[in-house]
Amino acid sequence: MEKIAIVTGSSSGIGFETALALAREGYYTYATMRDTKKGGKILDIAKKENLKVEVLELDVDKEAIIKIIDKIVHDKNRIDILVNNAGYGLFGCLEDLSMDDLKAQFETNFFGVVRTIQAVLPIMRKQKSGIIVNVSSVAGRIGFPVSPAYISSKFALEGLSESIRYELEPFGIKTIIIEPGVIKTNFMVSLKKSTKPDSAYKEITEKVINGITMMADMGTPPVEVARTIIKAVTSENPLPRYPVGNDAIMFLEAKKSKTDLEFENYIKKELYS
Image 1 (tube, rainbow, N blue to C red):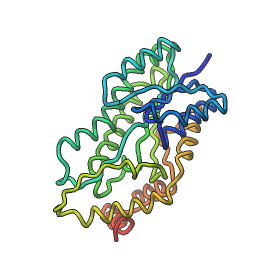
Image 2 (image 1 turned 135 degrees about the vertical axis):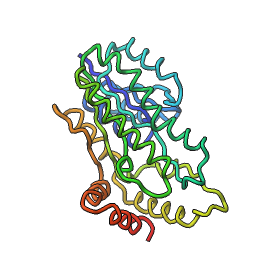
Image 3 (image 1 turned 90 degrees about the horizontal axis):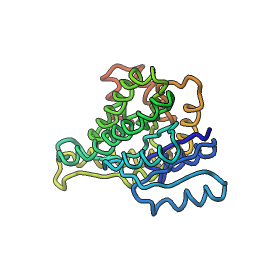
Image 4 (image 1 turned 180 degrees about the vertical axis):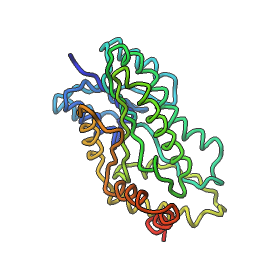
């Protein structure tokens, strides 16, 4: 039986590489993205390698997700893997952020995931199988300065993922969290910033953005995240979490081994000292 995968945010970076990796594993893969004009590259590769990839327009901020899932179920009668990758980063200290900034961040990074999961669950329950992969971040377990909106959305995603593991296990549905560190993608290019010209936080904001940008230049390639996702979804008993990247592992190990105050000083040194 043909297996079906859906990947959100597939126009570039992690989503792009993951959609191709799943197709190479034999999945009929729906590579979804907000702007299908950006789908030419993935379709060219799919054609060259004879992969089953279909590009669909999907903005996870919209209720249109239900129509897309209904179309896929109508066409294929099943969904085996959902990879929730769509999202963006917002830099800015809390006092500089508007409520609209915060709501927009959660709308995409959290509520978009909720909508998509809710849409696929009926078919996964019916077939008594399925895998949900939520692409979080090491920032879903560790707080960093100058990105409270992004980090809060990822903390929320981690909590959601932990909770639904209990709920979905009896139906044969697995939930996996992927926690990349700084990945060498266009994330920094698409990063949104909300800093007032006269902000009291201008200095720390510039230091942190410069630090993250330098880390991104040496970041883990997105294909490594895709490989980790393939490893997870092809495992008989996948782990709840998969950190990706030496920096992610380094931060998580430091968090375990240090007191809270020691870890705060460690983060200050790493990011902007």
